[in-house]
Length: 319
Ligand code: ADP
Ligand code: TRP
Image (cartoon, rainbow, N blue to C red; front, side, top):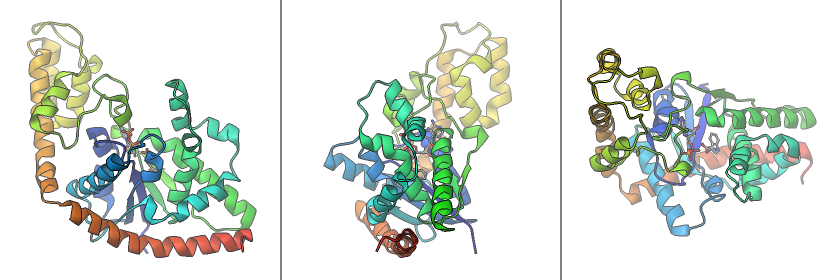
């Protein structure tokens, strides 16, 4: 039997090229080899997004993004967390197995703390729900960006704890991190993230892409001055999007003569070339198509999840 892949993205805003390279593109590449489950993490999003219209819009949009990026809805099981509310039941059970100090070390929690945000219990429990998402389908592999690696490791811990307490029940999943694309920088040099306002949109218009690229932070070196490509954020993006021109660009950086403006124009063109076929495909997917894709996916995943929960309740004596 094919191994199972599971991953999810929160519908908390427009997807960006970091989501694409760190996650989506990899699901697309692996969908032929694995039995693939990809969902929209709307319960997770509720920790930050409290607006019903936006939540609905973003959820449909993420489904369109998935398909436009190349996920085949005939092959891949696409659904929302709400389609399998059992994950919240499982998260409760898992919450009784993991300690508070452990959760206080979680990335999402520490990030919220560092940003001085008021932290709701949902943010604190975030990795527990994520463990339920993963373990409930007995995923073998979970492709994610570096920021999520620790959360997948917590899912492994939780799975082991349950198995030790109640007998072998869950598969222990492997995080799949791709070193080359594990942390895509944002236009300010921090990790690119929907919540930091530093993104390059995956489905932006040409004008939006150009405007976002124009804002990439650079030093103030003039056109003729030599520049160190290893210390240049625009060049870091060239490494991702201008692979064919890389030797030539590197030479021009080192020799001088390539200004930041021209370098950014080249970069924006290359990003637009990469995303325009996906953007076109996205135009052809209606809201109704997205809803229908979710309906079919929900049907497929519900069976698996219902059976797993029955097993879990029985093992734990929850009658
Ligand atoms: P965001 O941080 O923008 O809210 P999500 O948390 O929804 O993104 O992440 C969805 C997926 O995209 C996860 O697998 C995450 O690891 C990946 N991802 C997000 N940002 C990046 C990035 N800057 N570089 C690489 N992967 C990323
Ligand atoms: N926490 C993930 C993120 O923000 C989204 C997510 C929720 C997820 N559950 C998951 C990713 C399970 C992989 C597997 O990116």
